Amino acid sequence: MIINIMERFKNIGLKLTPQRVAILEYLDGNTSHPSAEDIYRHVKERFPMISFATVYNTLEALRKRGLILELTIDPDRKRYDPNIHPHHHLICLRCKSVVDVNLEFDVPVPDDVRGRFEILGNHIEFYGICEQCKKEGGDDNGSL
Amino acid sequence: MIINIMERFKNIGLKLTPQRVAILEYLDGNTSHPSAEDIYRHVKERFPMISFATVYNTLEALRKRGLILELTIDPDRKRYDPNIHPHHHLICLRCKSVVDVNLEFDVPVPDDVRGRFEILGNHIEFYGICEQCKKEGGDDNGSL
DNA sequence: AATAGTAATGATAATAAATATCATGGAAAG
DNA sequence: CTTTCCATGATATTTATTATCATTACTATT
Image 1: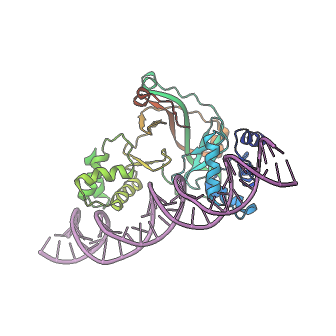
Image 2: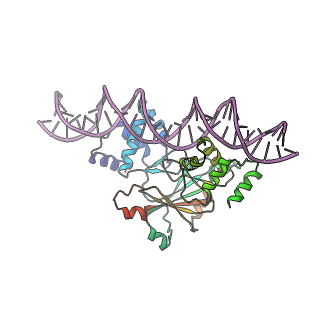
Image 3: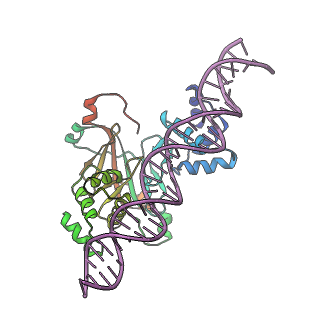
């Protein structure tokens, strides 16, 4: 999979730099829905000189080509998802962790809506409390 | 409806200032999902002295009491919704407009998922092209 | 292998949204 | 009316993201 992306990178005329490889390797199969800063901090361990500009640059290059998704599920920051297949998300209101739901749901939108809006896709966010947070107790459920 | 909110405002110990009334009136029945800046610009017409701090202040007070929802559907800014009943959204990829879908969908989440995550609610985002944008043509569909 | 062409890097500055601070003003209650 | 205490507005700060640009370095070609 990651080989494919690297090949596609080159085929499109994008240069495959060590920094980009590191970012791609971090993203490959990653289901933690990292933010730009998460990625920056991780890659920095191997490339202490890496700049935020490179991270944003690479993410934008990937996004423009549809190789990653930019998620708008965290009110504070963008998150990125290398899983580009249609799927949904469970979002923990306490710890903000995001878990994939790899299911196809049939969401029957009425004709009168379809007539007024060309629907190209959908994304379901499930809000709740993750297993980990439930174990730890507490009663702040955050807010929807 | 707006009377109710104003009453509740006072009952909770919040002060009902002219600025807040203006914000409440603008939000009441508003289905445009305005950003803080949208609200600021509108209220500024009547209260040229109003500050952004007051807008954010009021929105936070309303949100904390569950009187409005903070929407995380626009990658660039938070949007606010006075409709606190469960509903979903159509988001135009071209003009970023947001339209309500006041329907209840039954989204059957499998038991193994429910066992690992207490689901408290869900929100469906439909992506597509609105009627207005389709009329105007163009072929930039934005990206999911 | 040397080189030329071009895109990527990283340092830095610039935007922009949202939050924090705080002296002053004003709503609410008695 | 007066007192209390929260809200306001001016401003500063924080944080995320985008923009700029000289330098670097990958890639293809020779």
